[in-house]
Image (cartoon, rainbow, N blue to C red; front, side, top):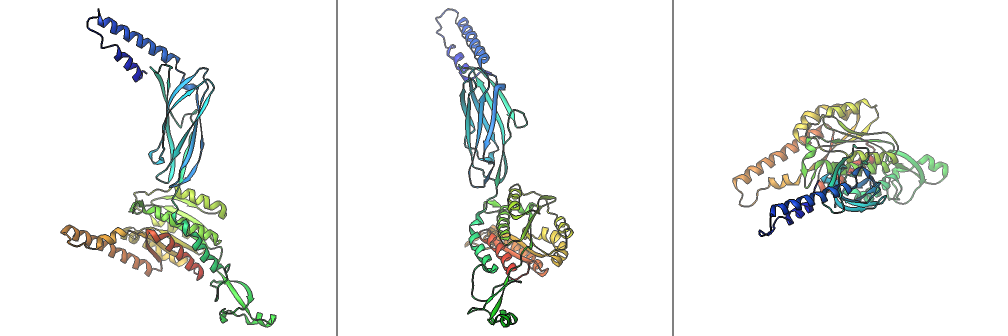
Length: 438
């Protein structure tokens, strides 16, 4: 193929003086000379089959961070090579610079660095490398597009982990957990349901915790200490159906649920509880269970990263049948879903009697503050404002009725705005654990 430079060479020979004899003959001569130069330039251009590509760099990054990948280009031809290379990624990968010009001697290699700033979590692959090999005059080039299914082009996928802003709450939650666990000395009787140890009475201890038999044996006043139950099962059930795609602020509801599930998972792992994950809509999208805490947490984070909302209705019977089929051990089931009437009343409520009989169930839902704002009439409201406020008030009333129905079935409902959602879900877990109700 010819380049713009070739077109400019041709254009330079067209405006010839009219007084010159046979101007069209001169134009033809210019065209022939330029065409011959372009053909020679194309023949000298190194073949693209001599190019070897190799990728390296970061494979994972948290959403909001930056990753660096490198593409090493090697010239295996026996002559110099002038390349124009375009390294394309999916738009959500946030690649900073995709087009490069390279000059490679025979056997030389150069490394291209690309900074990625992803805007969505999940897998962000490199799409295509397009290369042009120019001649030394830049009049013509060879071009080739290389996809990742070709043998000579290496594949690369950047896994973007979900945003985890609630990690800042971990020190506070872990401090509460240590108090429950007896790692921090507190005044008064420690909470918990499992006997831990005997110790000497100190001022401020609850007299009801005195063990009189042990006191008689040791000739000193001894008290019993308790600790929260360990090795309990916590199941995070994420609804990835259509309600999870609703925008809360500038992100989908699913992202807030993922953030809260991550905080709960880390907290439960620190408390020596076993955490499993089940994400589903019309089908099961992710399942993480089994394994130790050290191996499970990375697997769980990787599974959460790949989750995307699906515009289908969630089939809660899949989750209920799965939970009821996997043994009789009691578990804390935290369902991350929306308090919308249709999916809850038609999908979840018929499953609840069997679930709450065997498990402790918590439904965690992110509240949309815009609905409450729309329900309040501004000063000087128009007819449209009144209709909008009435619709918002109706939505809030339905939400309240759904919440009341769930609580009548024995479900603990956490209905909080995005800012405090993850904290309140973890508080519900800590409260149940301290009371021995897991």
